[in-house]
Image (tube, rainbow, N blue to C red; front, side, top):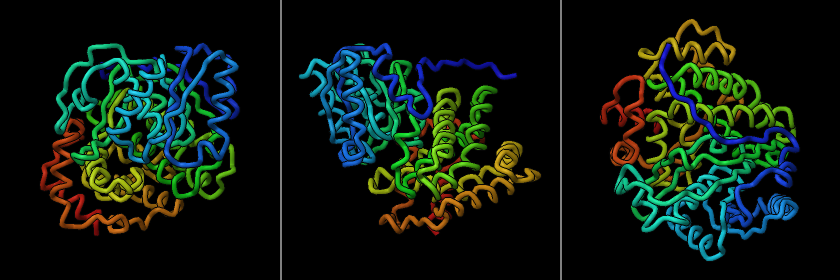
Amino acid sequence: MNNFSHFIPTRMFFGPGSLKELSTASLPGKRALIVISSGKSTRANGYLDRVQNLLTDNGVSSIVFDKICPNPIHKHVMEGAQLAREESCDFILGLGGGSSIDSAKSIAIMVNNPGDYWDYIHGGSGKGMEIPEPVLPIVAITTTAGTGTEADPWTVITHEERQEKIGFGNDDTFPTLSFIDPELMLSVPKDLTAYQGFDAFFHAAEGYIANIATPVSDAYALKSIELLAEYLPIAVADGQNLEARSQVALANTLSGMVESTSSCTSEHSLEHALSAYHPSLPHGAGLIMLSKAYFEYFAEVSSQRLMDMARVMGEAGSSPDDFITALMKMQERCAVADLKMSDYGITEAEIPSIAENARRTMGGLFGVDPAPMSDAEAIKILERSYR
């Protein structure tokens, strides 16, 4: 039995209709900065109005920061923090997908703290400084099922000028409250449903093979993988299927718990480098492109773990190849098996630089891989994924 620690302090409201709890929940402040994407869907679907009205019912005023990109950037963290200071906000509310909620976490760090956000980042050109002042409380309301950020402390931000996409977090960046209402996910398009669902899948799968996995993270991971294998293809095919959306949302939250009790591995480092250079690449799509070559690399050293995952995905699990088979079947059912790096402008000539960036910016995740991976081996995985 492994020794482990377990700390997930977030109170979660889960299930269809659970957003209404926002009107009566004990919130961590009286004035919220609501962080949303720069797209139209949060307003067009009525989610922003609903949230503001529920906050008003709860005696909370709010102001909106609506600049967040799909791959959120450093500049907007600093702008959001400045607005929160000017408006005397005492908590930050992320409404939307992982980009909005991650940005909310990073903004919450900077409202009370001096200097630049990258001063506190570990990896790349970050200075790795300690955060001296309190982080504002964070509330997460997720409208997608992909990152698990509602159940973990992690936030991933790109420094757009330095092409560095780096994850960061600590005990203070767990959301205080999270609302996971699958009714808010019914409007997500097919392709994004698939990309986001596979992001959750790889959080769980990577967390299961990581060398710091625990009995608790294993339980979360296998259940998340089982649910996604069964229900993600259904949600992709029929976005209005509330049962499928609910099961995928549960799997996503479980995958966030995996990230809180284990860790992603270097697949995420490699993808972060891809989308640092090519911000139009959806994170989940990049992971899908890498996945076959990546998990084949660890098939021998993690054979039992891959067989475990294959079994919960409906395969015999008699060899690690069964997991690769299950993974490819799932990608085909979700219509994402034919994604290509060249579709997003990635060139083969960039691959050595991408591998170097992955190690330099998020090298820590290579340390939790189930076996060492050299730079040359990382390049081979990228090359195999490219072709």
